[in-house]
Length: 353
Image (cartoon, rainbow, N blue to C red):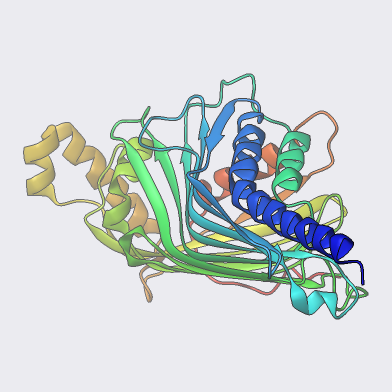
């Protein structure tokens, strides 16, 4: 036996092990710099993460303290904050012959700030796709959100508007069509949350996320919202105060090959616009008189048996219009429809083909 060669091989093995240990120790710092650089390359935004942890055994890495800030965002309200993001292989899919990933987001917060859309460097769909692929090279098949929050803020209105949905729990399955690929809408999304005013949000969605312009079928309901919690928004838009009442809001929406249609139906019950003595004291007799007229008009459209304010707003459009940003147009259509609509009830009239 050649002891000299054996000894040399022994030291080579030790050297390889030490090298792997050094690489493992350095890897989180390398990945952190890469992630920070990737986030900051998104036009109009700056981003950073606090820490990265590598989990080699299960093929994952964990991001702590991710923040993505639009250049026009107020300091206190960055566009995106995530306490922890776990990005990993989905091992169950490997046994089905697919290499896909899963993402678990802990306490993500999204702030949508109105009146700040004049930034000429707003990233395109391609920019967002490139950034997401850089962070998660594999196709995502499963997405989970725990204790999420989304807030709409408008500091240009008087008074300021702050609307939010918190305690959001989302589970999206089979996004990469690992199972039931032949089904037209093979993926499912389920979302629940709590709005300001104690409202309960429930969203159920079927989707084909693998299409360039996804097909989907959505049923959503927001129920039990106390109207007084929306007074800043109502006052900013209509210059009146609501004394009491509740809001239930329902919507169905379906998209196929870029064309979408559906409806929004809020349902307002027990609404009271005027407290004459209090309103006269706070806003003067003209404001009180205005709210009295609005209160009268509300009464004229209420169902006398149920005291429900009724209307229905249809939604339609096309996401493939080459002259417009399809996603921006879609969000604008939804925003206008939700503001206009006043009634209740998922009718079941929109069905995926």
